Structures are given as C-alpha cells and as structure tokens.
Image (cartoon, rainbow, N blue to C red; front, top):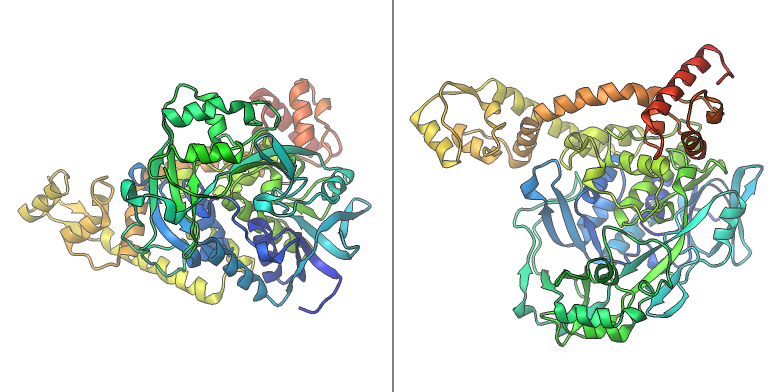
Length: 626
C-alpha cells in the first residue's frame, strides 16, 4: 500500500484484537492503517500461549466462521491439542490448543502483509483527534498526524500499564514491553470517555531442561486428527506434552510467610483482578484452609526452552517465586527464566459503547479487546473483528453488525459488556450463554458463515466447501430417516454390546442416534452405513440435540419481540411515570438500543421494563412524547 497520511480506518494496537480489526476492515475494502509501538510484538502472547477451552473455543470457531484469522493462526502454531468437557456433552465440549507463540505471531504478521489495502507502521500513538464529536484521526509521540474516518482503539493492557513484582512497581507494558504513557488515556478521557483501572497477572517461566519430567504424569494430544478452523487440515500432534504438579503445605507456608511482600495482601494494588483465573496470592488469601492447588507445566514453543506454569500467576518478589517453585514435585531443581508479575492498566467502561462497539461520546471511534474490560486472547480477537467490520461498514454507509445472544457467543460477550458492564475482568464462560445448546462448537459455520459471506470475508472456495458439507449431511439424514432397522438377533446383540436396550419393534435409523449411548460409529456398525466420520458426527450431534434445539428455538422466538422493539433516541427515562430512580439512572447511563438490551441492565427490574415498553408504545403513537 502506498504511503499516505489519510485512511478510512486506523487501528491502534497490534495485539489479537488489533490484528483482527485491521484484517477485517482492510479485507472489506477499506484503506487501513495499523499502528503498533513495536512491530516485533505483533499478536504477542504475553500470558499462556493457549487458545480455546470452554466457551473460549466457541469464540474462536465463530470468529473463523465469520472470516476471522485466529483459528487459522492457531492451527498453524498448534503444539498440543485436546478436546475438553467431553463428558458433559457436545453442547459444551470444545478444543484447546497449546501454541508455539512465535509461529502464531508469524502467521498474523504474514496475514497482515498479504492485504494490499493495509499498511502496518511502527509508532507510539499519543492521542486521538476529535472534531465536533467525530473522530478525525490520531497523533503519535513523534509528532506525526494521521487522519481517518474511523479509528479502532485496541491498546490491550498498555494504557498507563504499571507492573508489580513484590513491593517494586514500575511503568511497563506486558513482558517488559513499553507501556503507553504518552497521552492516549488522557486523550480518550478528554474526548468524554470514562476510564477505570483493572489488573491481571502472569506466571513465572522455567527452563524445560531443569524439570524432572520422569516424575510427572505427562499428557499428550488427543489421538484423533482435529483442527480449529472449519477449513483447516485435521492433524494429530505429537512430541509436546503438558504435565501436572501440585502445590503443598510447604508451598503455602512460604506464601503465607511472604504475604507482607505481596502488593495484593498489603493492598498496594486496590483494583480488581480476574475472578476465574486468580493468582496464587489470591488463592492463599481467599482459601487459606486449602492444602493444595494444581499447577500445569505447558510448552510455549517448538524449540523454546521455556515452560509456562499455568495456575501459578503471582505478585510475589522473584526470590519468593524461586523458593515456591522448588517446593513443587518435578521442579525441585527448576531454573526460573522469567519471574511472574502483575500489571494494572486503564480500561474503557464498556457501557459507554454501542452494541457494535462504537463510543457514543465520539462517533467513528470504536473500542475493542482488553481495554473494554475483558481478559483473554479469544475475547479480544472476537471484539477486534466486530469493531473492524463495523468500522468498515460505517465507512461504506451500511448498517452495523450486531450478533444476537441466541446467535453467537460473540453476541453474548458484547451484549454483556455493553448492557451490563464489567466490574472485574470479564471472561467468557458457557454459563453466561442461556442459549448454549443451540450455539455449539460444531455448528458455528451453519450459524455464521452466511454473515461472513455477506461481509465479503468468506471466499468462493470456502463457501462451496461448506455447501458441499451441508448437502452431504442433509442427504445422509434423508437416507437415515428413510432406513428402517429391523428387529433381529444380530441388531439386538449389537445394541447390547453398546449398552443399549434391544428393539421391540422396527426403528428409524436416525432415531437410534438419539439414544445417549449410540454414537455415529456404533450406528454405522449396526446398519453398515457408508458415511465419513465428519458427516456422521454432525448427524449424530444434530440428532441428539434435536429436541433441545426445538424447545430452545421456541424460547428464542418468544424473546425475539423484545429484541426487535427499539427504544427511541433521546428517551428520558426519569420522565416515565412510575419508574424507579435507580432504573432510570442505570438506563440513562447505558442507553440501551432495544427493550431486550434494557432488560439485561443490572438493577433494572421487570416492572420498570414493562413501564419502558408502555413508554415506547406511547412514543410510537405520539412521536417526541415519552
């Protein structure tokens, strides 16, 4: 792309969110500039280089179905791959990949370089330029000015980042990177955005060759070939293992004795951290009677000597970290390569954002990723994609992309942030998704590829491949629905072998898949069906969840009316007769776009929602009247 200082879209930050935002906007035809303070840390994985897991894996699959890059980068960089939650059913099972962090970053760097309408440039952004409530561009520390019609801020944990190791703290970004302390936070606040502080933390890294692996239980990858991307080549992975060790009473005694040197215990850090991934310091403070916690040793690269200590994040000083490490089985002689640390940073209160991630205070300014109050690479990438796509749609004069709560985990993520806010770092969990039975890992392509196609982000080749799979599934379903399984000694013997009850009368073949104990492979053995495992597995999951999906579909349709009922611009909630002062204040703060979104604002009760609905109907009959 030719050098210029004028762009359709500028993206601030080259992490997971920024990369996805820049790729989405540029692939949709916008002249895009990605600014990162260091081009050598694009798509940096400063914490555990793992992608996926419960709910997070669903985000990655959905992003892939929409035309994002994270699943493809993960497949390229995978060292170790396993299915999680396999005993809990297909609705919540998902993949988790341990990645080579350098391969992962290299893939994103190549992807960015392959788009002709995208320029990547190293610069420290010092502020956003706002003109009459509309974003106009950005300025850099070097005095440069770039103009743009839309700007996406995806600055991660860099905004006024402050690292803590014991009682020592200093300005820094993650992993020793330079933090953004040069005006970006101040610029956003001056533009009218409210910023607050969160904290997160990471673990020490130890030398691979100093671990006694023979004394530990090793876990390899699953034997079946798999891939995160819908279009990825399914592979098996070998040669890299994860191992489990545990803390002990001795570990905890050392931690308790050193609590006076932890800024968490001494309250030197007063901001909230992640609830679902607490540091060891947090665990000792909150669960003092627990005698042991699991620690997982996980690789970070094909040729790296570093091992990540999952579940061992800490704010303790380095000398205490070393002492603690040596109490862990298998790590008695471990050499620490990098100490763990905590980092606090600025984030934008997400209820100030529209459901398409545009700031209400500044038109054309989008926010995405960890600065919206989330934690995790997957949450960041999903937001980045949505922000980048919506920035491009706005440039093109088109309506925004907003995914519903019954449509995607991504929709739940963004609706939770913009409706409910984040009073602690937000992590995506299956329990947050009330419609998770119909938003599974296996059907993300069916749910979302059509949207990616409309955005121009799904190629003809990929779209045709998806159509072929769908046609094969429907054809096989039709045949199985027309196939009767007779009552016979052979059939009943086979059913008994799979722990299933015998047939008393002929059955439709596809109905046998509704039995929990009958898998696709079992049915194939019983009736001799000739269908590939991929197609068969999809048929099996659809059959097993058919009843749930029908009930969930009826529920979604009942709720859809609230989601469609738009709240008029400028509604003054305090003037609604009978509404509580608390509800009026919270609704005025969040500015929900629909009655459904209003119903999810914390502190707003059902009676007040009914009053809002009456006010909407009255406004429809008498415009400009609340």
